[in-house]
Amino acid sequence: MIKENILVSHNQIIIRSIPFDLEKQTWTEKDIEDGVIWNKDYIVLDPLVDDSFGCWFFINKTDKVEISPDSIRAAVFPFEVLNYDDFSINTVAESIKLYRDLKVDEISEKEKGKYYPLNKIETINFEPGSYSLLYEVCLGKPEQDISEEEVYYRFTFVRDDNPIFKVLKEDEYGWNFETNLNLETKKLENVNSQ
Image (cartoon, rainbow, N blue to C red; front, top):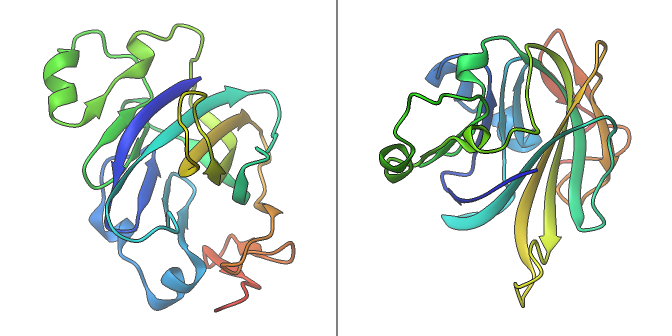
């Protein structure tokens, strides 16, 4: 498992496998209500917490989807790894690169807010293809040595030739078991607006 303490700001977390594209992360009123901008290779998510804050990101690749008991929001999204060299989870300030690049100077890249955890972790390898991406917003103690509950995020990738969107935990922000993703419009449907 990959774990990094990341600065989240500007109400967005970006998972992408193509180059940065500002147009793909421009929020419409509907996107704001839904808490997501979805494209198969570029997902922008509302972290549900306002302001800037540091938190843990836990990233894993597994054989099955299992939600954490700490989840306050949990949903599976179809996600496609198209361009391995752009595969990353990002905030406005920092990036976790999900590919190996042994040519980079990790110390200087970390100072720029870019992390290359797979340079050290040999047990996780992402290949191009389709995945079910479990996105979880959690409230609890992410590490044993942390004394108070805090918000943290889990991103679990499961290889899947036919991934489908599914809410696994209803939440007070509008996602429910009837919420679905319209692949043509790339918008959520049946979200209970606040």
